[in-house]
Length: 148
Image 1: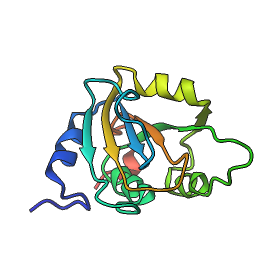
Image 2: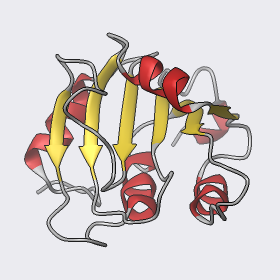
Image 3: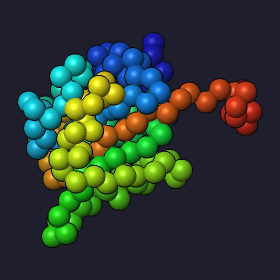
């Protein structure tokens, strides 16, 4: 039996295919999938209903399976109170930088061939899209404190 919080077979398979420098987009329910993703990226549809599944839950579970080198969010207008950004920051490792791009630059980054996986969430908060850059696996030799 699999011993991970993620038991969704297509999501596990897609995550396993992502190597160092691959990009994974956790997209909110407002994201325009038709023209704003790399055409060969695998899309996992977890957006059953508004609010289900929330993007922070997906981020938390994905972070338990992969290492993240960098996170990128689409910037938002000053008149929008983006509460999800602080939730993401709290979930990401302290050493993981967060980059903010204007809308078109964010879309261009997501359309890159590095984007291998797009996870569609039911997150209804606006500007909740986060693009993760996969970090390399750290071996026991590189981090002896983690060795069993």
